[in-house]
Structure formats: C-alpha cells, structure tokens
Image (cartoon, rainbow, N blue to C red):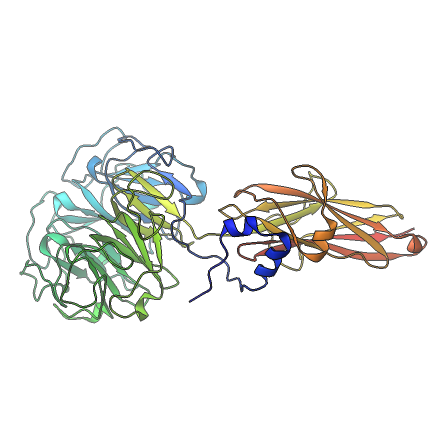
Length: 535
C-alpha cells in the first residue's frame, strides 16, 4: 500500500519550511487515480450541471454505452431512446457540449424513429470499436448485433456490413439458440477477433469466433452462464448468470462479466478455450459464489452494469443503483470479495449523489477507455458522457529574453535539455523571462529552486505574477512555494544573472538554472539561462 500524499489543505496551512520537510519524505510515482475526481469533459450537455433531454447533434436521451476507436480516438455513444449511435471527434479536439460529427441508425440528426433494416436501430444498448476500426452495435430492440467497417470514416446513415443474431436485416424476433439473442447488451472482443456479447434476456454470454468473418446470422461456439444454447434459465452459483449486462476481455484473454442481478463480477480465465457452462474462476462483490446480495460499501455492488480493464490491470466496474464506478487494482491477482481501490462518479465510497456535477452523476451504465487511459462513463440519468483522467501534475517551464520568444514549451525534463537560452553580455546584468505553466489537469503549486550565486556571478529570482517579489532566498534553498495555479494557468518568474566586479575584465560562463516541481507529485521541469560574459 502506498503512502498517501498530504492533502492540499495541509500543504496550504503549513510553513514553507515544513512543506519542504514533508515533501522530502515521499517517493513520487507520477500520475495516479484518486477517488472522487472531477471530470475533464462532458458531452450531451453544455455544462456539468445541466440535465436536459436532447435529440439533435448536441444532446442525448438515455445514453447507454460508449466506445472509443483505438486508432482515431473518435467517440461513439449509444443514444438509446433516440435509436441512434452518435460519433464525436477525439477527446483532444473537443470542448464541453460539442456537437457530434455523424449519426448511425438515422439518416440525419433531426430523426429519431426506431426501425429494422440495414441502416436503422431500435433501442441500441451497446457499442464497441475493435482494433481494426469496426463498430459493433447491440441493437437490443431488434435482437441483433450490427457491424460497420471503418466506422470513423463513414457518413451519417451508413449501411451495416454484417449482422449477428438474425439471418437478415429485416427479422427482429428473440430466441434462445446459438445464433439468436434476447435483448443483447454490451460487447467485448479479444485479440483473436472473438466477439463476446452479453445476452441478458437469456441470462448468458455468447462467444462468436472470428466474428468479423462470420456470415450474417453466424453461430456462437461457446456459451457462459448456461450448460447449452437452448436454456435461458437464471443461475445463482459458480456457473450461472442472472441478467448479465457487461463484458470485458483483458490482454490475457480473461473474460470479465458484470452479473447484474447477482450483484457480482465473475472472471473466466482463457475464455476462448472454455467449454459451455464452465465454472467461473473468481468473484468480486461477493465473498463466495453462492450469495448475490446487493451492497453499497467499498467493494460491494448494486446492479453492476459494465466493465473495462485498463493497461495497468485495474478493473473498472460501473454500477446502476450506487451511481458510481469502482476501480480494483491488479484485479487478476485478487482474492474473492476483495475491496476496491478507487471510486469515480461519487466523492467517496459512502456517497450516492445523483446530482449533475463534474464529480457526481446519475444511473451509470456503459464505460470505456481510450489509448491514453482516460475513462468514459455514460450518465444515463443525467443524459451525458463524462470523461475522467488520472490526476496529472505536470509543470512546464519556458525561458527567453522576452515574453514573445520562449524556449522549452511542452518539453519536460530535469536537466534543461532543449530548454536553454544563451545570452552574451559585456559585464552587464542579464534578465531571463521564464513562465511556469500548469500542463496538468488539476490545480497545483510548485517548489521553485535555482542555482546559487557563485564566485563569478550573482543570481536573483523574482516572482512577477501577483506583483514583483524577490524570492531569491527561498529559491536558492528550494523552499519557495509558488501560488496555486489552475490547469492551463501560468506564472511568471524572472531570473537575473549579473557578473561580479572581480571578473569584469575576464571571460566567464554560467548555466543559471531554474526549476519548478509539483508539491503534490514531485514532477519537475528545468530551464537554463546560459550567460557568457565577454568584456
């Protein structure tokens, strides 16, 4: 267990010298998830506090699931009650409330009628984009899954390229066979192209081998939760399921199932090689395979809906009734019923607030990851998508002779490489303008440190933001703490270097460095003002 960092309140109230002493005790590990973070982006609403029904290119009516194209970063949302899937630009190109760029299941953004043909949906509840850019959509009302090739490049109203669950594009009946569904929901795909589909109406999960190459109406080869392909009964033990809604497959081929009405998550190792009705290997949310009680404490579930496993092996599980996402670190190595480590969508494990804010949301359903590890969550009750990131502390120092010409932007290191400005002088003082920008995503303060005066040059540091203050003494000892700066904000410091009298008739050089390190994380960035005295 890692030692928690000091709270921001504590850091703001202790003395500068105490801050330096406290910081010395911690080993900083870079970016980290914390419980109760604020989302960095909202889609479907203009503000984090809005909760409006939408049916155009800006809004949702019951967003159920979300997926991200691993190649393009584009975002796909199953907008269930509008019978469509919306496609948005990648995270880096979006601002709160931005419009979708394309729609699937409808001819345009002004239509929201259900349908059953090659280009329409009836209550879509699951979306997935695989490594080849194919979009898979669980079309629950039509009891089928549709496939769209190269989905990030398609125009609105595109035709599907394949169908599972029905033999054609006009049938919509449900059934319990190896090639039919009853209200399919979330989807997952492994590295071999095997598609896993949650089939809650039949209390099972089906696996379709090499799904992209199956013919329309192709059959599944493995069923989880049932002994055969014709039994739809609910189960409560190690080999049974009761209205499973979510599925995920990790990089090791392990299948994770959100077993909704059993209030648990089951794990099946080496899923693609299993036999029908095999026992699960592991359970979360319950201490054993015979209980299914709902709970609201840390590590318990009340209606788990969907799940994903990130690159670090953390399992993230969304909950419908507890209105939160729980994160379980190193999930594959846990024992049955272990506690979770993080919570998103609520401030802590004891809060169940469905209010629309940047950190709380209502009726969580789908969840997805992008290639940068961001977590996308569907707030079904608040009609929006929230995007969460790890707390990121990232100072970015730049240096120049004036404000317009700065070096070192978006270069981060502790030795000043690529962040140096050289100036020649004739026994005169040199002033370097430096800016310290918060490239992280949450407010941060910085410990400012500079090179000390030596026998040839005098070095002074001035904080300019908020009024000019001589902070040389604190900078030389590394005890000066900057004002707190919001993400994207910046501070100005001037670094002044002056040759001493006794070398005025001599040649001399100095690399006068200045660095800033996060007081919460320890990440640092350094710039260098190189002075060449040439009398």
